[in-house]
Amino acid sequence: MVATILASLPSFLLASSVAHSSSTSSLIFNKLRSSSRLRFSFAVAPLCSRRAKFMAHTLASANLGLTQPAIIENPKIAFAAKEIDVGEWKGDMLAVGVTEKDMTKDENSKFQNSILKKLDRLLGGLLAEVSSEEDFTGKSGQSTVLRLPGLGSKRVGLIGLGQSASSPSAFRGLGEAVAAAAKTAQANCVAVVLASSEGLSNESKLGIASAIASGAVLGIHEDNRYKSESKKPQLKSLDILGLGTGPELEKKLKYAEDVSSAIVFGRELVNSPANVLTPAALAEEASKIASSYSDVISANILTAEQCKELKMGSYLGVAAASDNPPYFIHLCYKPLSGPIKAKLALVGKGLTFDSGGYNIKTGPGCSIDVMKIDMGGSAAVLGSAKALGQIKPPGVEVHFIVASCENMISGTGMRPGDILTASNGKTIEVNNTDAEGRLTLADALVYACNQGVEKIVDLATLTGACIVALGPSIAGVFTPSDELAKEVFEASEISGEKFWRMPLEESYWESMKSGVADMVNTGGRPGGAITAALFLKQFVDEKVQWMHIDLAGPVWNEKKRVATGFGVSTLVEWVLKNSS
Image (cartoon, rainbow, N blue to C red; front, side, top):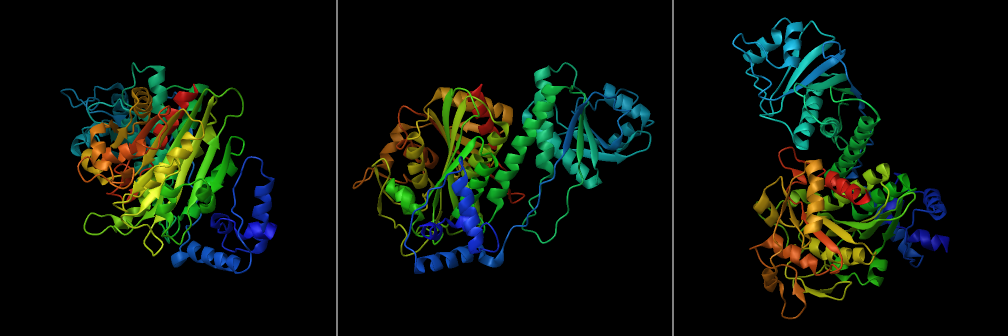
């Protein structure tokens, strides 16, 4: 029986090392069998030739192109909050966040801001002189770093914050700019101070310090796993001056580290190419989260056979064409103790590659070359799981759900005109195989509702229409619940991520009706993001509060050609709001 089970182990268990020996597989199996929190479901298959064929496929798919990501440990920054005079701080670089108002000078070309005036005096007027020569006015995006004698710091950097700075995104940007300046200067020990911090409440100071710390972590991150050569960042410590001290601030800085590391994790998932991050590999990453935080997170990974038993015809229809088998990922967070006040679900679209199927993506702007990002929703969900496993909030149960697969082309794939039956019994006429994400989410949403949750947020790189409507930096939000919208938007105000609520125009559903099934999966170009959301709504229990987030734009930074980790921070804040 053990041999039979091993023959059917998902490839993400068998592909976790370069050498796939039988002893390694046995060790993995025994470890899983003995785990009380980590649970996998296996479909038992006949032995004989199938095992050899499966193993050969596993090895081939795991090494497609002979590409394996390098194991690079992300650098850690030691954060400290200090109340110390800027003239007395000693280190490699003192970075000062300044607004345009802070850069105001009197008739003698002297700073009026007290901190800049003090620094300029210690430097014999050179700070004012250099800032004038370089035309540094404090505009957002401006920065200048000076190596000047006269201070304990080897360098002084001025970082522009614009006309004013009050939003989390502005201070996160300050942290990122400080990290960039430290990299250029090869600085190890850095301090950051605001030129103007008078009158800030303790709550504001906590939020600013957290945002700066988060920005620094994200600013030093470079995904070099697929490069033959890379340099390690130099920044080792960051002192935050003038924003208070004490246990509460230290706790806030630790929180910023936890969430930022989860954002980095999400970025790296999206950055990984489809020949490395298969559905099996994504399931493996989910299982690692459960293993790392087994005191609060359990895992249940379903195979295609088990999804078939649950009648997930919509999801399996998308997966049918790929040689890489699908895996349905379900992580569950439960607090260490105490009553459960709220039961939530986070559902992420998990297409590790989307060719478009028989409606193949072609022509300029089709973006088939970056369709590895089509699992950006699942990256946000799994990143949130990682952060919450570290933070361990009380009073809330959270289900993290991803129906992972590839949308490919083969003789076994779904065709335009096929009719799929979802797990809630509703039938779907496929009029476009490139509208596949909603088909996978349909069964994932039904599954989420069956967990007895009260609120669901799903995230998906679902439509190009949403990018047309809102551009590359703003995610579209669709929900019939004003209460849920209020909760998520309050969370986004803390995270600094940008969302915009879009209408769920019910009259548009007419375009989604089929002559031979309950619905079609696309309703044409006009209002495409809205009709996509209306489609998803058909698979959510009316008693459950539900929100759909279309993050097709902000999940990817086209200029830098890297993922952003969008969604993680807001989701974590939302869960914490429901736990308190």
